[in-house]
Image (cartoon, rainbow, N blue to C red; front, side, top):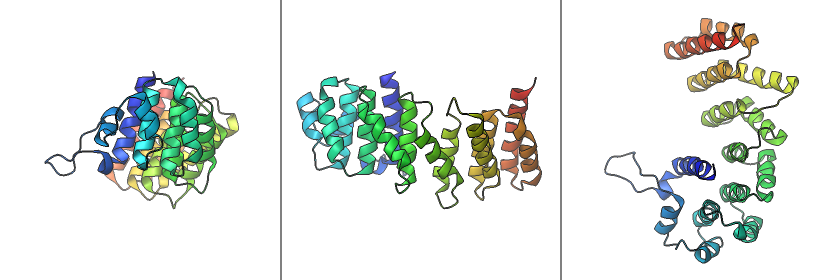
Length: 250
């Protein structure tokens, strides 16, 4: 389970920061992905425990969080105090969320506590608030109020990048054990994005509607299909309508 989570996180981070950590191939726009150890070795960091502990204080911000994640991958529970110390002095938000994840993967509650703070931080960059939401799911927190509110705020905002709105729509589907009131609010926010100005967001909202599986959404999706001018988007709406109808059949 730990290795699976680490691999997903590694891919997510590397897609975001490929320009920093990837070797460019001869084909423009392509890059190779690496594991934590390989990335650290590119920075001339040895993979011994003592070297990784020193790397937590490295001047390179990328090295610091990669060292924490490598220690988590190695299940170095005895490194928790050093990683906690690194988190306490870290000022780069990207590093904070990843070091917090490393602590959480090692079973230390300092990690989830920090991720909750990032979720709640309305002044933080939406991208990293969403990282915190996703990482809480990776740590098996199926419902956290601060993270739920973060995803809701990002979905609702018209000023936030469409990519972040799409990520928030995907994450909203994953919350479990919501109250009836919370579920109703989530559904309303998702339905509203069926009218988003960005086609990709409208399609993501349609997918979320189908995933949520609430029969009360059928009339709204029907209306969205009727008014949609983009044929490719309408095709996605129709596909998701079929899924929703199949899910909600008695």
